[in-house]
Length: 131
Length: 305
Image (cartoon, rainbow over all chains, first blue to last red; front, side):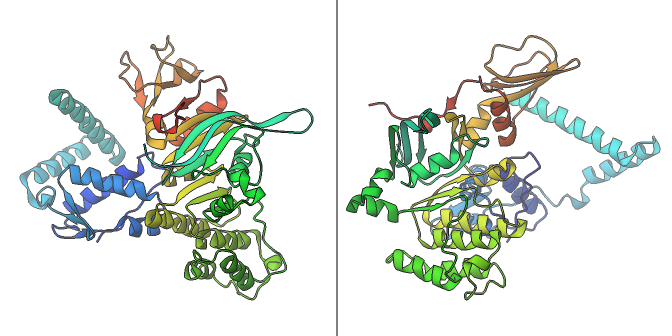
């Protein structure tokens, strides 16, 4: 079971925070196929958010094929996300790149800014290809 | 169309010899099962609207239907209107309770007055959550926040179909606020209760309310699903230039930069950075710009016969 943390000041829509946190839990293996997500009531009791928001997040996860609502039983995880990213060649390459960035004199914040900007640029490109 | 919790048609409320209008020609709809934020500055007409919906005031113009009844008829205490009153819970801003009664007696009174619907366990749980609230304590000895807790316990335990809450959280500490909001949301999750809640704390409304009614100067400025209202607007930032062809709610210039909130979500292009406004930004922009035209989503529109 996961527990959602809602940040009211983040500017990210509440339902999206639930979607993102569920996906993160799937990536990290904190949620596995067959696990039940907390009911809307349980989430609402803990976080004091609108119940329709929780249902909307779950519908979105269902639409993406990650969970399945079973009537009267709850919402269950149907598949995981991503592989174990821990020891893929990609991770080693990224570590390599980070070492080089450090040597080039980049600070933590510079690296984060650079990484985020490339990530966003690529995301936009992907969207363009998709359309 | 889904069932309607509140429907106002040309609703007006005037008082005083000069005919000051607390509400003026308000037409809107709140569908059942929504948690609706009632927002607006001081004197916007929020409390008047809630008191009208609770049947404590009678409109001086137009009509107001609540759960398919006329709330102000309850004063004439026809049996139908009496029935309507049992389905509505109203917590006024000053939380009127009997000061000489104890908490325990107040809850018993709630039980006696609401036979058949009263949830005693829920009332006790909400009072107990207050930590150290003695059932034998008299209401007059309670702090403002503690009185609020008792008033909300009464409203929730009544198991109403519609809750009308006027600034209910104003004097609560953050923990109590969180717990009582959670109790309200749980009630909505379990029973599909419609909740209309007025508040000045806009950032808090965003997470709890899926519907918004913005009043200003006795008139409706915005009404509809929070999400739809937000996605119908775009925040633009860019170099000072003519704005593209949009309804501009508000625009400000700082040096070479122009910031504007516009209606419409279509791509703008031309060097404009776009972002989705938060609910708070959306409401504030409308309050700063009294001339921006009102906007109601389809579900908030009153069907004209």
